[in-house]
Length: 170
Image (cartoon, rainbow, N blue to C red; front, side, top):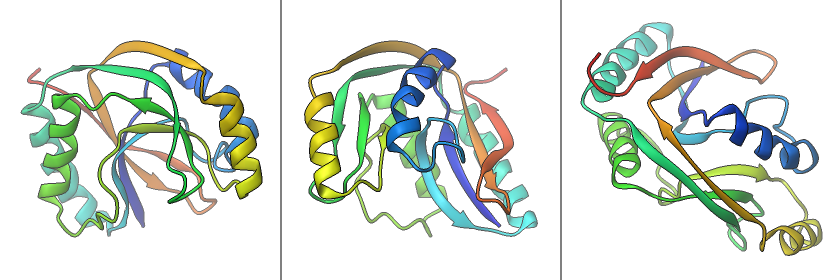
């Protein structure tokens, strides 16, 4: 089974992201807008239970933090992904590093660039047109993040929450 670790932003920010995603992201119906902390990986149900225990510990040693988005950016020319840029705070970077340090089988092909994808799998021409019209869009938004989620992928390709982890001691 495939699992992943993500942060879901507030409904307000998800609605804004979805206003673009429904046109530019073929994964729109499979998973809500999110920030990926650990990319998809294969695990058994037993391994997922062990993984969840470690995530509980990481969450307990982390603190809620301010999530800020500022603008629309792109990973071009590496790939044609358009996204809301999330400011890489110390807390967010720590959370990502702790999760991936604990589970070092993670393929870290790319450096951690916190973001919320709004467009992907676009042709070069389509990417150029869409990004050209969106890149000056202001996406100033701030909210407090107090949880992250372990997700698993269903047979139809969609993702659902396996367990939610609140940041800080309760």
